[in-house]
Image 1: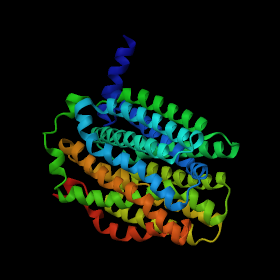
Image 2: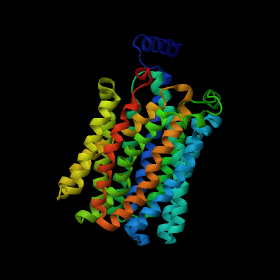
Image 3: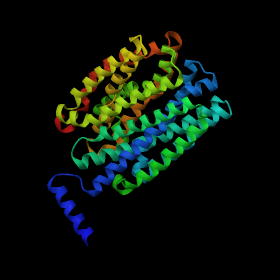
Image 4: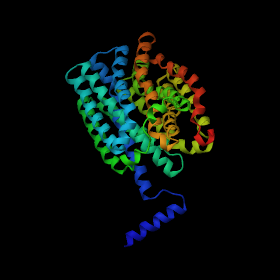
Length: 407
């Protein structure tokens, strides 16, 4: 009886103050947990890229082609993810994606350390990428629904959960590299932990299949013809390349360019993701105050400056400082793009799927592009490609304005 009265009072007070109710709180925490698990799984793999390169004896260009397998898997999963959420609901899609990621990263470790086969590693990365793709769309759709229910910007903080997961994964990877822990033990345990946490977290989601099925058939094809959706995709493409290049190449570039040990290069990557986490935590307040375009232009400029400091700083300490600036600059592009794509709830699944697919093309083209450039100019100097591509992407930032303002 007392609990019932307390619950009723808490809900009434929440409505009066325009605050989230208990169910809103549960959904918000659940989404944040799933984002964190996703980031942890991803960074666990990224933190062992230098070790996998050494185990397989790969050059930079060959490593770039190997990383391409992850992107191919993601691009196969992303176009179908929206329909899967409509059919089965976001919790089921997250569970499926987490399971595939756990199996995939274990296969990567087995292929590199036990079998010495880049074919096995590539196939496992494709499985991992497919799992990451469907998991990503499902959690972003759920995050957008929670954001709309709350009536204020919160998506960057969900992505801060992802970044927090990458911090934890990077630190664990740096520790594993420093201790000489076998890749199979590290990635096997990390994949299992992330999968279990994601499955438990998805139980708090509110999206059911019948709720998601409200979109009319054919919405996905129509979304591919909408100018604003395509412009958002191009913006996310450039900003995803800004973030993804650091994920794939920053640790390797610091090791090659500044002659650092493996653990120090991974620690530099941890600085990047830590700064990105901070940017995503404070981002919602700044977005509500200054608006999407102004803040995106500012963060893109910061990302370009950070890249220049990493490449041209001439000192490991300056480079690490540049990694922090780069992380702050890369923090808001992807979450703001997802929020903008989901502005209209009735077409959210289709538009998020389209924008994600275009954005993830950066992960398809980025690794081999940077790898081939690195073979000619060095891994560190190849990072300048990111600074160059940020310039034209600034022209499409206005597409991120909320639909109400555009009308």
